[in-house]
Amino acid sequence: MPRAQILLVEDTPSDVELTRELLEEAAIENDLHVARDGEAALAFLYRRGAHAGAPRPDLILLDLNLPRRSGHEVLRTIKGDDRLKAIPVIVLTTSRADEDVLASYRDHANCFISKPLDLDEFIAVVKSIEGFWLGTVRLPPRED
Image (cartoon, rainbow, N blue to C red; front, side):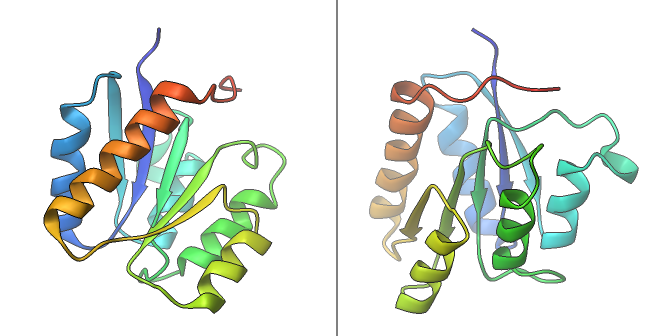
């Protein structure tokens, strides 16, 4: 089984590092790629500039509150593009606002998870994402 390619779109350094550590321990081998803002995420997905050789992600973990381009804009771009829309997008954000939940699902997010503030709960969330999305679900084949 090839290594799962995961794109984490997150601007909070501590969340990036914790997610990286947890996914390194995952039962499913994976490569974590990080984009720290919405523009960098789209450059990665469209293989522009320094990301010319970037792999197509199997899964995207997307924060909503990002610099340069919001997570909502990134999600709309992904789901509006026939080449990208099959990639599952998990919105993983601190927002608990009903408007963000509704907007994310209207824009075809595959799920919406509010990041817990408690460290142990955050660990449990990342492990549940890994277990379900990398262990149970059959992800779409890569169309490189």
